[in-house]
View 1: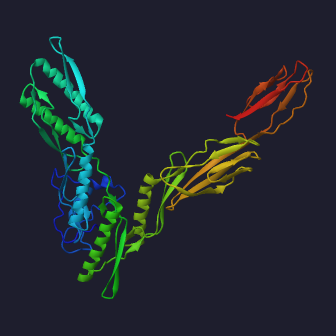
View 2 (view 1 turned 30 degrees about the vertical axis):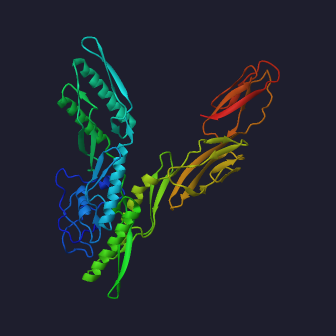
View 3 (view 1 turned 90 degrees about the vertical axis):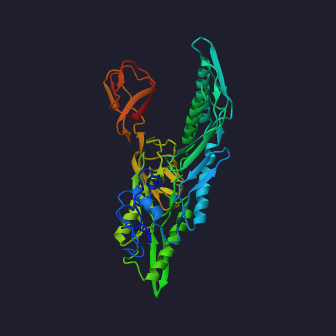
Length: 497
């Protein structure tokens, strides 16, 4: 059982309806799931942790995680940043964890400013639209450049073009009134933050001031939603282990991987390590020692298939996960290995050629696909066709012996992960090199002997057979009674069907 730490806090209630809570599960899919193991109280039922129970969803556990923090671990306060084009973005309180309120607030403010800067990246170009009025006259209006700010030039230009056509149509019905400045604040659906955008005075025209202002406000709200940032995924800590000598006894604790998240791994690790030390100190002061052993996992590997054949194996090193017993630690490690393999797999490529003839030059490259960087690659089982060799990812040579050869090539990366794939190459040859002479007075039959073909197909690709002699394409038998004397040269080709 994994426990999320939340000591000295008794208000881990589910968030109120409509309260924005970041979906940490979606942003960090490799993080272990802790919901169902929470109980908020002042006295830890599994020292040194105080755990939160009665949480029935990951969203609620994330809310609990953001509030039920160890003493010395702090959450950010609400932070607002104003961008260079006058727009503002507000990051809700509790989004960032750190070792001090000042550090959490600094990271939250940096996040807010990075978010608001994105919507100031582009303004519209001038956009003109002409419409035909009911009296057959033509009305034209141009939205000047630089009036609307949006995350992209396309978004700003599209709104400007739409606005130009609306105003051109309104001009058909008389003089128009300019809007006053209109601001709109939108709650970003993907972050819970609030983004404000202002459409300046005079950007929108209408038949009345009220209609001009209403359209300007509508555009401001649309731009605010368009500018909502795509939040970068938070990064979970790797397992952090700490020890402390207490009354002559050494106690050890591990904060499991993914228990804390931050804007990068270093921040998450720092928070997890600080919590580890703080909770052990409290345990020592209260003489509340961990009741269960702190057992690390054995080396675990999870294998998944590659798209075009072969397998990729992701390895979790010994001691990466800790639990109350070896079985639980191993289960956590193998679960992580299997889920993480899909995001980091590298696989061996196809060689593109399945067959070759004896005494023909052969060359093929076996490469890798995916993010992994191979540090070693070689033949690990089976046998190459005689005459071929494999080195540095290159399979090459001149095969000398017909037959079907199956072998496995494996690669490893610097993290100890591996990829392997089985290949089969067929080496074929035409055994018959000469044919006996034929007589015009006698029936003739001669089979062409081949080796290494699975389903050979015979054909004449050059020259001519003696009149009266035919080739069976399926059996390779030359048969018939020749009707003319002479010397006849022809080229025979054999291929696999």
